[in-house]
View 1: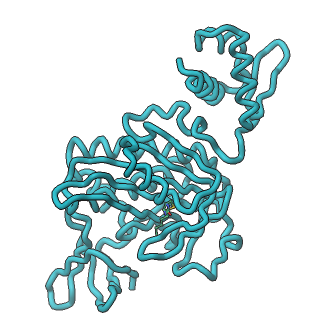
View 2: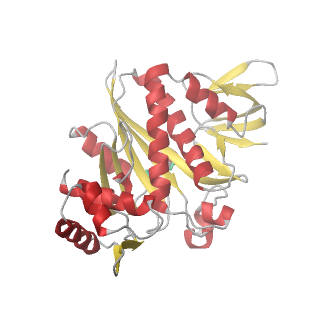
View 3: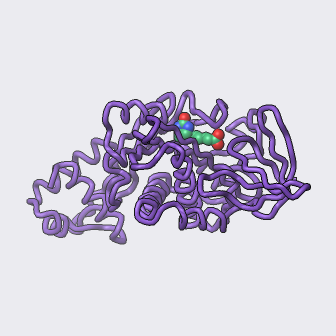
Length: 327
Ligand code: BTN
């Protein structure tokens, strides 16, 4: 087992147990000496993990470092592709920017970049994504699917559905999806997705899925006045603080499972789940595009992620970009 693998396994054992894990058990399961276990515990402490030695019993994990580490995320992740490499940064301009550069330099499929804070978080349509430290999730995932550029927007279905599933699994909240890639709770935005792509005419080289989720931020700290749309966080909506590392692990597992299905069966099943979770199917909406605005009733989305809106004269408009608001 690699050194970091031993540290990860120790964290996994702490999490799966119900408190104290004995040195003997750690040594047996990990296949290393008691002295080696002690050295690994010491190294974890040096990295910000508070581990208590309980006399005659073993070790107990009291807390993890405030800024989570790649080990926090990878320990027990058990995914096929997503998280093949995990980079955790204290602060960066934008995780999408870092992941894009890494992908250009050959980063593997499934590489994940996470930052505790972003100084220039990017939103859709050139907007800013407010990214304060220590409270939310800002992450970007590199994918290298063998698909045509026109099909790349289908990948948005994956990240949106994965975030919705992760919210349901970590809270009692009921998220709804709003086209193209917002996640709402009680009509307020809690997460946003921004995909960026590098492609040639015929094929996609890579796609970066950018995922921002408001986990524990207080809206008063985010400066609500700066937001275009009403926003919320899982803490504000549910009243309970969310464990950021745990949420991230759940999200990456969901993404891994959905991506696997996408590669095996195409976009159909993920799109079907997207539609089931959609806040706007069958609803009247106003669509605002750069030089045009119109209203209609949402029929669904096509296989390329475009919104299908039925106008008053019966024609169906295919909307590839723009803002959609419920009427
Ligand atoms: C939106 O406008 O709704 C999309 C917001 C996307 C924000 C995420 S946070 C992680 C990744 N890095 C960025 O700079 N943006 C995305």
